[in-house]
Amino acid sequence: MGSAWQASAAMASGIQRVLMVNQLVGKANMQVVAQLKAHYRAVDFICCVDSEVNVRALSTFFADQGQTLDVLIELGVPGGRCGCRSVNDALALAQRVSDLPGLRLRGLELYEGVLHGDDPQPQVEALLQQAAALACRMEPLVDGEFILTGAGTVWYDVVCNIWLAAAKPRRCRIVIRPGCYITHDRGIYDLAQQELIARDPIACDLAGDLTSALELMAMVQSVPEADRAVVNFGKRDCAFDAGLPQPIAHYRNGQELALRAESIVSTGIMDQHCMLRLAPGSDVQVGDILLFGTSHPCLTFDKWKTLLLVDDDYNVLDELDTLF
Figure (tube, helix red, strand yellow):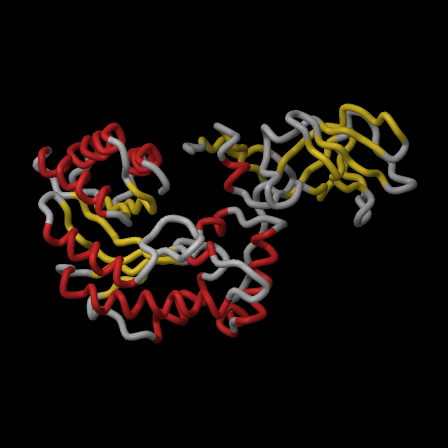
Protein backbone atom coordinates (compact mmCIF):
# COMPACT_ATOMS: atom_id res chain seq x y z
CA MET A 1 0.00 0.00 0.00
CA GLY A 2 1.07 3.59 -0.57
CA SER A 3 -1.13 5.55 1.82
CA ALA A 4 -3.19 5.33 4.98
CA TRP A 5 -6.36 5.38 2.89
CA GLN A 6 -5.19 2.43 0.79
CA ALA A 7 -4.29 0.62 4.01
CA SER A 8 -7.84 1.15 5.24
CA ALA A 9 -9.23 -0.33 2.00
CA ALA A 10 -6.96 -3.36 2.38
CA MET A 11 -8.01 -3.98 5.96
CA ALA A 12 -11.70 -3.57 5.10
CA SER A 13 -11.16 -6.23 2.42
CA GLY A 14 -9.83 -8.70 4.97
CA ILE A 15 -6.07 -8.38 4.42
CA GLN A 16 -4.27 -9.42 7.59
CA ARG A 17 -0.74 -8.15 6.86
CA VAL A 18 -0.57 -4.60 5.50
CA LEU A 19 2.74 -3.05 4.52
CA MET A 20 2.46 0.66 3.74
CA VAL A 21 5.64 1.16 1.76
CA ASN A 22 5.75 4.84 2.51
CA GLN A 23 6.30 7.31 5.33
CA LEU A 24 3.32 8.02 7.59
CA VAL A 25 3.30 11.81 7.95
CA GLY A 26 0.74 14.31 9.24
CA LYS A 27 -1.49 13.97 12.29
CA ALA A 28 -4.58 13.28 10.17
CA ASN A 29 -2.92 10.23 8.60
CA MET A 30 -1.56 9.11 11.95
CA GLN A 31 -5.09 9.32 13.36
CA VAL A 32 -6.41 7.17 10.51
CA VAL A 33 -3.82 4.50 11.28
CA ALA A 34 -4.48 4.71 15.02
CA GLN A 35 -8.18 4.13 14.37
CA LEU A 36 -7.41 1.24 12.03
CA LYS A 37 -5.14 -0.37 14.61
CA ALA A 38 -7.87 -0.04 17.24
CA HIS A 39 -10.55 -1.49 14.96
CA TYR A 40 -8.52 -4.25 13.21
CA ARG A 41 -6.54 -5.51 16.18
CA ALA A 42 -5.44 -8.72 14.47
CA VAL A 43 -3.96 -6.94 11.44
CA ASP A 44 -0.19 -6.58 11.24
CA PHE A 45 0.34 -3.00 9.97
CA ILE A 46 3.84 -1.74 9.15
CA CYS A 47 5.07 1.50 7.56
CA CYS A 48 8.46 3.01 6.69
CA VAL A 49 10.62 5.72 8.25
CA ASP A 50 13.69 7.53 6.94
CA SER A 51 14.16 10.58 9.19
CA GLU A 52 14.48 11.39 12.87
CA VAL A 53 11.91 14.17 12.53
CA ASN A 54 9.27 11.67 11.37
CA VAL A 55 10.36 9.09 13.93
CA ARG A 56 9.98 11.53 16.82
CA ALA A 57 6.56 12.69 15.58
CA LEU A 58 5.34 9.09 15.26
CA SER A 59 6.73 8.18 18.67
CA THR A 60 4.98 11.09 20.37
CA PHE A 61 1.65 10.48 18.64
CA PHE A 62 1.38 6.71 19.11
CA ALA A 63 2.80 6.72 22.65
CA ASP A 64 0.10 9.25 23.56
CA GLN A 65 -2.48 6.87 22.04
CA GLY A 66 -1.17 3.98 24.10
CA GLN A 67 -0.31 2.15 20.87
CA THR A 68 2.84 0.77 19.25
CA LEU A 69 3.53 1.43 15.58
CA ASP A 70 5.65 -1.13 13.71
CA VAL A 71 8.16 0.42 11.29
CA LEU A 72 10.83 -0.49 8.76
CA ILE A 73 13.90 1.61 8.07
CA GLU A 74 13.91 2.66 4.42
CA LEU A 75 17.27 2.58 2.63
CA GLY A 76 17.50 4.86 -0.39
CA VAL A 77 20.05 5.96 -2.99
CA PRO A 78 21.40 9.43 -3.83
CA GLY A 79 19.13 11.14 -6.33
CA GLY A 80 16.45 8.52 -5.79
CA ARG A 81 13.18 8.51 -3.89
CA CYS A 82 12.73 8.32 -0.10
CA GLY A 83 15.12 6.48 2.19
CA CYS A 84 18.25 7.04 4.28
CA ARG A 85 21.12 7.95 1.99
CA SER A 86 23.79 5.92 3.76
CA VAL A 87 24.15 2.73 5.76
CA ASN A 88 25.39 4.70 8.76
CA ASP A 89 22.36 7.01 8.66
CA ALA A 90 20.04 4.01 8.43
CA LEU A 91 21.75 2.25 11.32
CA ALA A 92 21.61 5.38 13.49
CA LEU A 93 17.91 5.79 12.74
CA ALA A 94 17.28 2.15 13.59
CA GLN A 95 18.93 2.69 16.97
CA ARG A 96 16.80 5.79 17.51
CA VAL A 97 13.60 3.85 16.76
CA SER A 98 14.55 1.13 19.23
CA ASP A 99 15.10 3.75 21.95
CA LEU A 100 11.77 5.58 21.58
CA PRO A 101 8.37 4.68 23.05
CA GLY A 102 5.41 3.94 20.80
CA LEU A 103 7.55 2.39 18.04
CA ARG A 104 8.79 -1.11 17.26
CA LEU A 105 11.50 -1.81 14.68
CA ARG A 106 10.60 -4.69 12.34
CA GLY A 107 13.26 -4.59 9.64
CA LEU A 108 14.53 -2.92 6.47
CA GLU A 109 12.90 -1.78 3.20
CA LEU A 110 14.16 -0.49 -0.14
CA TYR A 111 12.97 0.06 -3.70
CA GLU A 112 15.60 -0.77 -6.28
CA GLY A 113 13.40 0.43 -9.16
CA VAL A 114 14.75 3.99 -8.81
CA LEU A 115 18.06 2.84 -10.32
CA HIS A 116 18.21 3.45 -14.05
CA GLY A 117 20.74 3.71 -16.87
CA ASP A 118 22.03 1.63 -19.76
CA ASP A 119 22.97 -1.26 -17.44
CA PRO A 120 21.53 -0.74 -13.94
CA GLN A 121 21.82 -4.37 -12.82
CA PRO A 122 25.26 -3.99 -11.17
CA GLN A 123 23.92 -0.99 -9.19
CA VAL A 124 20.83 -2.97 -8.19
CA GLU A 125 22.94 -5.92 -7.03
CA ALA A 126 25.27 -3.64 -5.04
CA LEU A 127 22.32 -1.99 -3.28
CA LEU A 128 20.84 -5.38 -2.40
CA GLN A 129 24.13 -6.67 -1.01
CA GLN A 130 24.53 -3.46 0.98
CA ALA A 131 21.03 -3.91 2.39
CA ALA A 132 21.65 -7.51 3.41
CA ALA A 133 24.81 -6.48 5.28
CA LEU A 134 22.92 -3.63 6.94
CA ALA A 135 20.15 -6.02 7.98
CA CYS A 136 22.72 -8.16 9.80
CA ARG A 137 23.94 -5.09 11.71
CA MET A 138 20.35 -4.15 12.57
CA GLU A 139 19.42 -7.65 13.75
CA PRO A 140 20.11 -7.03 17.48
CA LEU A 141 17.57 -4.18 17.41
CA VAL A 142 14.71 -6.33 16.10
CA ASP A 143 12.84 -8.80 18.29
CA GLY A 144 11.53 -11.85 16.46
CA GLU A 145 11.09 -11.99 12.70
CA PHE A 146 13.21 -9.58 10.64
CA ILE A 147 11.45 -8.30 7.50
CA LEU A 148 13.70 -7.55 4.53
CA THR A 149 11.66 -6.20 1.62
CA GLY A 150 12.21 -4.82 -1.86
CA ALA A 151 11.53 -5.79 -5.49
CA GLY A 152 9.17 -4.04 -7.81
CA THR A 153 7.98 -5.66 -11.01
CA VAL A 154 11.27 -5.28 -12.92
CA TRP A 155 14.00 -6.77 -10.67
CA TYR A 156 12.22 -9.29 -8.44
CA ASP A 157 14.34 -12.20 -9.71
CA VAL A 158 17.58 -10.36 -8.94
CA VAL A 159 16.29 -9.37 -5.49
CA CYS A 160 15.45 -12.99 -4.68
CA ASN A 161 18.71 -14.40 -6.02
CA ILE A 162 20.93 -11.88 -4.20
CA TRP A 163 19.12 -12.02 -0.87
CA LEU A 164 18.68 -15.79 -0.80
CA ALA A 165 22.44 -16.20 -1.28
CA ALA A 166 23.50 -13.40 1.12
CA ALA A 167 24.17 -13.60 4.83
CA LYS A 168 21.14 -12.16 6.61
CA PRO A 169 19.40 -12.19 10.01
CA ARG A 170 18.57 -15.67 11.30
CA ARG A 171 14.81 -15.15 11.40
CA CYS A 172 14.58 -13.23 8.15
CA ARG A 173 11.42 -13.05 6.04
CA ILE A 174 12.12 -11.81 2.51
CA VAL A 175 9.12 -9.95 1.10
CA ILE A 176 8.99 -9.03 -2.60
CA ARG A 177 6.48 -6.54 -4.04
CA PRO A 178 6.01 -7.03 -7.83
CA GLY A 179 2.46 -5.69 -8.02
CA CYS A 180 1.96 -5.44 -11.79
CA TYR A 181 1.86 -9.22 -12.25
CA ILE A 182 -1.87 -8.95 -11.45
CA THR A 183 -2.69 -7.71 -14.96
CA HIS A 184 0.73 -7.36 -16.62
CA ASP A 185 0.72 -5.12 -19.74
CA ARG A 186 1.83 -4.84 -23.36
CA GLY A 187 4.41 -2.13 -22.69
CA ILE A 188 7.14 -1.52 -20.15
CA TYR A 189 6.39 -4.53 -17.96
CA ASP A 190 6.11 -6.92 -20.89
CA LEU A 191 9.58 -5.73 -21.93
CA ALA A 192 10.84 -6.13 -18.35
CA GLN A 193 9.44 -9.67 -18.16
CA GLN A 194 11.15 -10.67 -21.42
CA GLU A 195 14.45 -9.31 -20.09
CA LEU A 196 13.91 -11.26 -16.86
CA ILE A 197 13.32 -14.50 -18.78
CA ALA A 198 16.47 -13.88 -20.82
CA ARG A 199 18.67 -13.38 -17.73
CA ASP A 200 17.21 -15.91 -15.28
CA PRO A 201 17.27 -19.68 -15.97
CA ILE A 202 14.71 -20.36 -13.22
CA ALA A 203 12.18 -18.15 -15.00
CA CYS A 204 12.81 -20.11 -18.21
CA ASP A 205 11.96 -23.37 -16.42
CA LEU A 206 8.60 -22.15 -15.07
CA ALA A 207 5.51 -23.27 -16.95
CA GLY A 208 3.47 -20.49 -18.55
CA ASP A 209 4.13 -16.76 -18.61
CA LEU A 210 2.49 -13.49 -17.65
CA THR A 211 -0.26 -12.32 -20.01
CA SER A 212 -1.65 -8.84 -20.44
CA ALA A 213 -5.15 -8.76 -18.93
CA LEU A 214 -6.04 -5.07 -18.79
CA GLU A 215 -7.59 -3.75 -21.99
CA LEU A 216 -9.32 -0.53 -22.94
CA MET A 217 -12.36 -0.51 -25.24
CA ALA A 218 -13.07 2.60 -27.31
CA MET A 219 -15.16 3.66 -30.28
CA VAL A 220 -14.06 5.45 -33.42
CA GLN A 221 -15.81 8.82 -33.30
CA SER A 222 -14.24 10.52 -36.29
CA VAL A 223 -12.29 9.68 -39.45
CA PRO A 224 -11.53 13.21 -40.65
CA GLU A 225 -8.72 12.23 -43.04
CA ALA A 226 -7.85 9.09 -44.99
CA ASP A 227 -4.85 8.43 -42.74
CA ARG A 228 -6.29 9.69 -39.45
CA ALA A 229 -8.96 8.54 -37.00
CA VAL A 230 -9.97 9.68 -33.52
CA VAL A 231 -11.27 7.43 -30.75
CA ASN A 232 -13.14 8.41 -27.61
CA PHE A 233 -10.62 7.91 -24.84
CA GLY A 234 -7.89 10.18 -23.54
CA LYS A 235 -5.62 11.06 -20.65
CA ARG A 236 -8.55 10.87 -18.24
CA ASP A 237 -9.04 7.19 -19.07
CA CYS A 238 -5.63 5.51 -19.23
CA ALA A 239 -1.92 5.67 -18.53
CA PHE A 240 0.14 7.58 -21.08
CA ASP A 241 3.44 8.08 -19.22
CA ALA A 242 5.11 4.93 -20.56
CA GLY A 243 3.81 4.72 -24.10
CA LEU A 244 0.31 5.13 -25.53
CA PRO A 245 -2.27 2.34 -25.55
CA GLN A 246 -2.06 0.54 -28.91
CA PRO A 247 -4.82 -1.28 -30.83
CA ILE A 248 -4.93 -5.05 -30.46
CA ALA A 249 -8.36 -5.88 -31.93
CA HIS A 250 -10.93 -4.34 -34.27
CA TYR A 251 -14.70 -4.97 -34.24
CA ARG A 252 -17.66 -3.83 -36.37
CA ASN A 253 -21.26 -4.76 -35.69
CA GLY A 254 -20.13 -7.42 -33.24
CA GLN A 255 -17.75 -9.12 -35.69
CA GLU A 256 -13.97 -9.13 -35.34
CA LEU A 257 -12.06 -7.74 -38.29
CA ALA A 258 -8.49 -8.54 -39.26
CA LEU A 259 -5.96 -6.16 -37.76
CA ARG A 260 -2.66 -5.98 -39.62
CA ALA A 261 0.44 -5.15 -37.57
CA GLU A 262 1.12 -1.39 -37.56
CA SER A 263 -1.99 -0.70 -39.66
CA ILE A 264 -3.53 1.37 -36.86
CA VAL A 265 -1.16 3.18 -34.49
CA SER A 266 -1.85 5.58 -31.62
CA THR A 267 0.20 8.72 -32.15
CA GLY A 268 -1.21 11.38 -29.83
CA ILE A 269 -3.50 11.81 -26.86
CA MET A 270 -5.49 14.65 -25.33
CA ASP A 271 -7.85 14.80 -22.36
CA GLN A 272 -10.68 12.90 -24.06
CA HIS A 273 -9.35 11.99 -27.52
CA CYS A 274 -6.70 9.65 -28.90
CA MET A 275 -5.42 10.17 -32.43
CA LEU A 276 -4.64 7.21 -34.67
CA ARG A 277 -2.49 6.95 -37.78
CA LEU A 278 -4.04 4.70 -40.42
CA ALA A 279 -1.91 2.81 -42.92
CA PRO A 280 -2.99 2.90 -46.58
CA GLY A 281 -5.87 0.51 -47.16
CA SER A 282 -7.03 0.49 -43.54
CA ASP A 283 -10.78 0.00 -43.25
CA VAL A 284 -11.79 2.08 -40.23
CA GLN A 285 -15.27 3.58 -39.90
CA VAL A 286 -17.07 5.78 -37.40
CA GLY A 287 -18.73 3.51 -34.82
CA ASP A 288 -16.11 0.75 -35.03
CA ILE A 289 -14.87 -0.65 -31.72
CA LEU A 290 -11.14 -0.92 -31.06
CA LEU A 291 -9.53 -2.71 -28.13
CA PHE A 292 -6.25 -1.33 -26.82
CA GLY A 293 -3.44 -2.89 -24.84
CA THR A 294 -1.96 -0.66 -22.15
CA SER A 295 1.43 0.15 -20.67
CA HIS A 296 1.96 0.80 -16.93
CA PRO A 297 -1.38 -0.56 -15.60
CA CYS A 298 -1.24 1.27 -12.25
CA LEU A 299 -2.12 4.58 -13.89
CA THR A 300 -5.06 3.05 -15.74
CA PHE A 301 -6.50 1.30 -12.68
CA ASP A 302 -6.75 4.51 -10.70
CA LYS A 303 -8.92 6.20 -13.34
CA TRP A 304 -11.79 3.72 -13.08
CA LYS A 305 -14.08 2.99 -10.12
CA THR A 306 -15.30 -0.22 -11.77
CA LEU A 307 -13.63 -2.67 -14.18
CA LEU A 308 -15.47 -5.30 -16.20
CA LEU A 309 -14.30 -8.91 -16.00
CA VAL A 310 -14.88 -10.57 -19.38
CA ASP A 311 -14.30 -13.94 -21.04
CA ASP A 312 -12.39 -14.51 -24.29
CA ASP A 313 -15.47 -13.46 -26.28
CA TYR A 314 -15.86 -10.27 -24.21
CA ASN A 315 -19.02 -11.43 -22.47
CA VAL A 316 -19.20 -9.59 -19.15
CA LEU A 317 -18.83 -12.01 -16.22
CA ASP A 318 -18.53 -9.64 -13.27
CA GLU A 319 -17.87 -6.10 -12.13
CA LEU A 320 -14.72 -5.38 -10.10
CA ASP A 321 -14.58 -2.32 -7.86
CA THR A 322 -11.27 -0.48 -7.58
CA LEU A 323 -10.09 1.31 -4.45
CA PHE A 324 -7.24 3.60 -5.42
